[in-house]
Image (cartoon, rainbow, N blue to C red):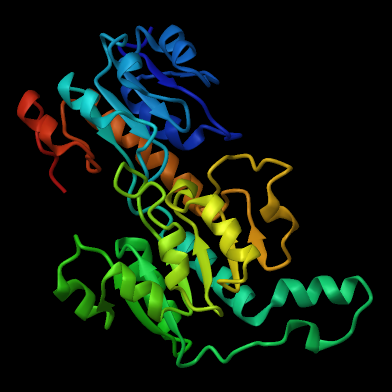
Length: 332
């Protein structure tokens, strides 16, 4: 029997070969669950030493009922499913994988931008419904010389900036936590949120979800945007006030939206966004490629393996927890 119990709290995956390639070296077998509620997580994971977590809630209540848990490793960059403060108080490591889908998400955001600006999807649908007339997409504006505003300037938007600049698009960004020299290296101008809304023809959201960013883009921001602006979201749906977005689209305050994420997922079939021709919606797919998924699963499992082997993981969210634990730093 394995010395440790590692539980996958919930998953949408067809294989766990990447995780097993890491954990088999420690003789650890995975326990696979499909938990949706706090109670289900507690029941399934009460004797777990580590969790691999996708969407199941890892709240304070859950963490207080996991006496053996040493690490919660998130399948992803975001960690809004986990109460990080509660984990830190209990000396539980929270880890994520910050660098597994930089190209995938930035490519997806760029594809959204191109399809929105060039009206690719609208033209395709019109042709297939029997209309052969480019004028149904009027107006379309030249990309070169337009401005892309990035909300957040971490790894993914920095990667996106290079791709947009290759099309001759000027890039500006709002991120109060990024040093100016980082933006300067990417030839990106740091601006205020208001200035970004006022100047941008395309706005791409790359913010984590937390108490400061929830519904950060709402009526005030949409009222400042250009009428020809498109907003793109490949981050978290709750960063945009969806009711405010719907109003802005209905009142033609902005030109359109391209959304990989929504406030409620899966999408409510009665959501007005589904009936708008100037809105593109994808099912939270921007992160995905065959290579990215395998990398994510392997690195998430390595976080667990590191902690259970006595090391701090490479991807540590709650760095304050170091003061509570006697683990070693792993040599790179």
